[in-house]
Image 1 (cartoon, helix red, strand yellow):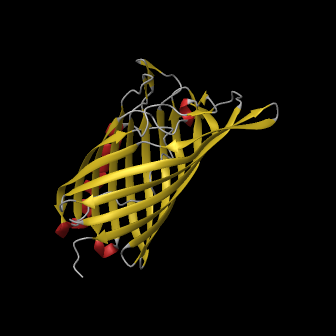
Image 2 (cartoon, one colour):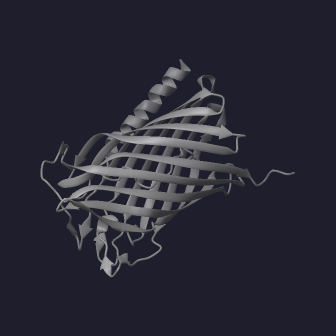
Image 3 (cartoon, rainbow, N blue to C red):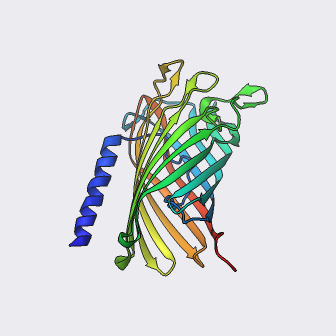
Length: 314
């Protein structure tokens, strides 16, 4: 009875959060890691997460339908690597720091029967986030975490290659500061080795030096994690992403913003309770864009996580 009541409460909570936020588009395959370790850490615990993500796009959509308008741009893809470092300041307060690098952001055009590639690369925006465990009940295996943070560029100047300024879609960074907020809920059911999670995130971007402002992002995720065998976990995630339109000098850009719903499957393996290896595959199951936009086809990622207890005595 307790399990049923708790499950119904969690599902209602997740349904409310997801439907209030609407959702976001073309950010599928955004440079996020393959890890679901998003709550607070114990005091004096340190966590390193190294991750890699690949994203591929090859189809234009108008609204929620494939566009029939021919275009020279045939496909686009990127390779991204990043590192996240987390530290438990107290049992309720954790600090996260993120840094990432686009190995490449590539667009492939077909001109007169030949492929022509344009490539961008470089550091993405970094971020610092402070997370607070607002409600932590170990006896109930339940946690509610809130987070606030800042995003920052490593350069406020756009990238030029061979004297030519790259297009917006190929720039590795927004070249602007931003703010981020998180709301995370998790509930464990040890008897059946099941975990439910809701991860909700809002990102706001300020305008850069060119008065170009990327649209804000709202991301809502629901995770179900289940132990398969010893040290091996399977995770199924449904993620809804929404992006508002971009702005240039307070005028919105027509072919920007929209939403995509993504189904994500993940496998995670734990070694000695200190190392965690994970891999995931993302596939969009519903799309709706403003105007005409190149749509993601699939994305996959890998991560390696290392936990350290700095308070442990020899």
